[in-house]
Image 1 (tube, helix red, strand yellow):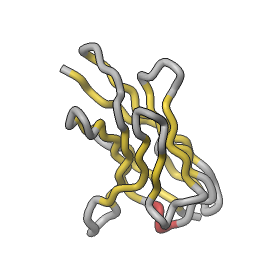
Image 2 (tube, rainbow, N blue to C red):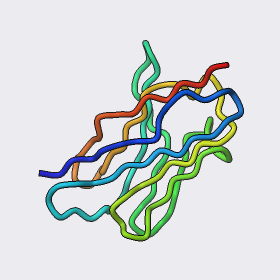
Image 3 (cartoon, rainbow, N blue to C red):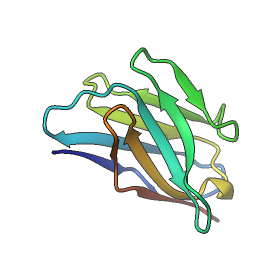
Image 4 (tube, rainbow, N blue to C red):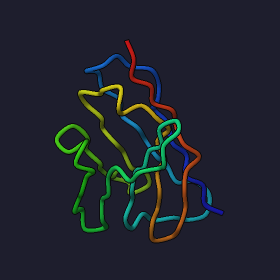
Length: 113
């Protein structure tokens, strides 16, 4: 059984940065594509970023230029670097392995002064 575990969320002031991590544990697992999603209170979950097995990346327009998705060298961890955060970035962030259909449990990001 594979589990995706997110970490790195927290409270940050507007303009600050956070780096989220998503590590796969359990049965032997190799990331193919990986994605991050987020869900703000009272809103639907939305896709934020994608990285393919070849390394191609794509982003929600609202985060383009501020967020960066990447994979660790061990191919066991996926990261989301988030810079210049605003209150609109607050929410629960989830990682996903789209090819295998796995989701993490989410990590809370709160941007507030």
